[in-house]
Image 1 (cartoon, rainbow, N blue to C red):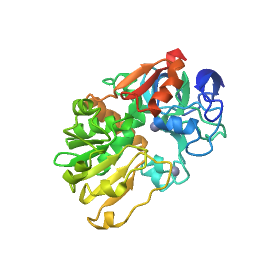
Image 2: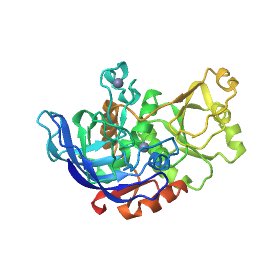
Image 3: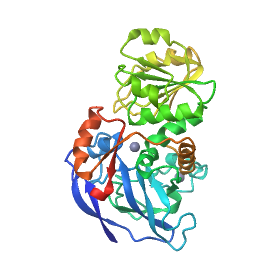
Image 4: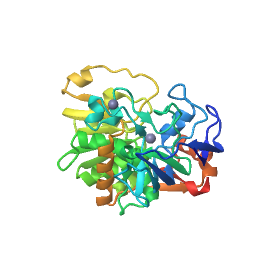
Length: 346
Ligand SMILES: [Zn+2]
Ligand SMILES: [Zn+2]
């Protein structure tokens, strides 16, 4: 075991504080990563506050991890000391089910092992990126291309792949009209990636407050959803809408903006069930879908794509002592667009 400095929530809803945790010894197929940067994802807050159900405490959140390999196990073939690497939302899965074999480890039939707030195959709770080191199996580690700075790469490991995956799956590209609901941590990545894929991109946001940012990030159009005229004007417009918000939406209204055979894919997860009149799907053979992060292979594809197109997250770099304040600001939508912790300050 190695003792590592970390920031943890000691109990649900309690402020995070500095502590130490134990990391396992580097096994045959493991890499030891010196974490340099860790993004703050909205789901860190949901889990640290038990918004998604009972959680494991103390909890070290963080699944947007960027760092450098400092040791490798004897059987490791994919990485060497000094490699720049990332870890996203999962650190293991069964590796044997249909979905794992197809590269969809995030949909593992036995359940993926989350980077934190989960139990690893060794029976011990997993701890995430708000810490200085982590030990991860090489098969759940990805390479960060040289063209990407580690600080702006960190949020790609969750926000990047979460939006890349549905955009790829539903074929965002030239000639396609894509709308992104919400311009937050996920939404700003969705805009950049959809634009780089060649789609015509529209942001649907509550107000026009971030319009200038949205256009700079690559959006072609920007509409306020608080204005009822938006829904009249854009009826039947989009091949794909990706919703990045976790607030409950009027899904019927948004489905009216989708073309025949189009899809509304959700990556945000409201805490409450939704109600929907199915006529909004029937009238236009439409799909209401969901999408969860991406597999390991797809996460690597996303990083390579982002490096090729010069895409990183827009970040506010903070020290570890600012984490609790940052959580409040995320809840108030007061971040442009992702907080990233400099883990040297832990
Ligand atoms: Zn996340
Ligand atoms: Zn599996």
